[in-house]
Image (tube, rainbow, N blue to C red; front, side, top):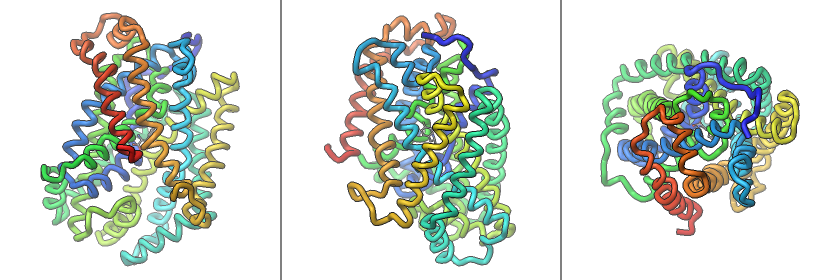
Length: 449
Ligand code: PFF
């Protein structure tokens, strides 16, 4: 059970920053705006906030309980909690999800470095909208450059991981997260002072209830899981470094609220800019990589804004990649008794190999598909739409039915020191409500329903 001499985060602030660092990422600044754009603006935002509070927050508390109680990596955690055969292996679902997410997420993270470079070298200037599109496609489909940036991104991640939980993860989050918030605020002010700001804000905040459909609800829930890093072992792993004094409900609530705030701020940056230049908000995944640089270049000091925006995206991506890497590294280190640096080397090497194939799969290997999807899309699909919801559903059932109620209550309330009046409802939520709703979503996502 609890491992002696295990690493832990050093301060409450460190715990919040590291966890928010995992949650805040490409999901908030890249995925959230384009999902909002495609799913009706304000209506999507409203449903998203409901999903985050009703599902994201309690599920995060559940993962925090598993990690902090067992003080182990995700695979070891379930082994410590039960001797029941199938359930003992539940941790593998999360670790596998984390590894597969890394395969495509780190490739996109590498792209942010290319755009920082382009902003710095001035090569974003003087391009037309068509040129931005053509250049993005040429770059993301090329062989060498995306792989080079991927390698650089992974080396940075690797160095932080091998510096350890406190010196690497916690320290880096402590300066990266405030910097990220600062850049967010500056870019928000810039965007809000554009002539089209009002229209953009109306799109984001004025819900048109007729736009709410089952598809919108499902997209919002999927986005909530992805954005809060739920179902991929990360929150279990990070909470295994919490202290016995950490207030789990409060920490989960802070992380949930801060993550949601960043997504909304990203919307405030992007939609006024999009409306100001009369661009359709329904662009999809290329909204951030094609539309935004195009918008920035039409502003005075365009390359400066572009530089800060992509720096923001890179920092957000880095803290998330670190958490994904740590989930897999902690598993390899503890379950195979390796040193931390050796475990990290295995993980970095394998992620690099997977990332190379994922990157080439949208370039020269585009023609090779499985179920009609390139490897890149397949990794995205299997993690966000299968492993994360399925894993979360099983985690709810596991904690709801198999974990002793008193153990759960004692841990969440720090042996009665914290009041948790809704605990009985929380148990009903874990046993029935969450699994049924997630099952419906899952069946719908894979088209069985
Ligand atoms: N939450 C991250 C984002 O919004 O970009 C992505 C992520 C990180 C998903 C860690 C899952 C995870 F375990």
